[in-house]
View (spheres, one colour):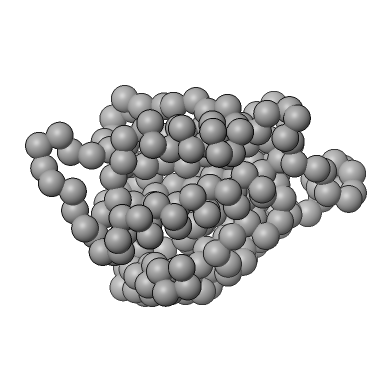
Length: 227
């Protein structure tokens, strides 16, 4: 698992170093598709009240751009996590003046938030054996569950019907991960598809009896500083 993570880290460090803090820097073709994914993922969040958010695989913090554009009135304590130190360095420069955002280098959600999101983090398999990559995905999903008080959201690419699977990419049918989240994580799952991209999004919520414990401190304190 350590070697797998190292290869992923090096891949994404390379993209941001080549292209800078733009969609290509996080391996997306354009901002339009990037934002369309954010629309789906953020459906797991309740914008009627303040909340804290883990953005796993945050890159240069593009989600903050979208939140500023579409949810400028929302009170969101944002924590961006990325395995690539180069990504985090770019994010820290770009969002140096943002007083409710924090960025950290890491391969897990080390602090509990109300919600956690991950966009595109499972797509680039880099030739790793399928079983190893799916074990990696399971570990990330377990960590996101543990780091999310209310729920979390992730996306996956769908297989092509008339093309063989690519060794460099990971594609899956929804049932594989809907079943894992329901049976292994004991969560409720809502499947989103048909939003214009060849992929699907899962909105995953902890059941009331498995809700993550609230960290010490009041909600008021949580509003003052990002987690």
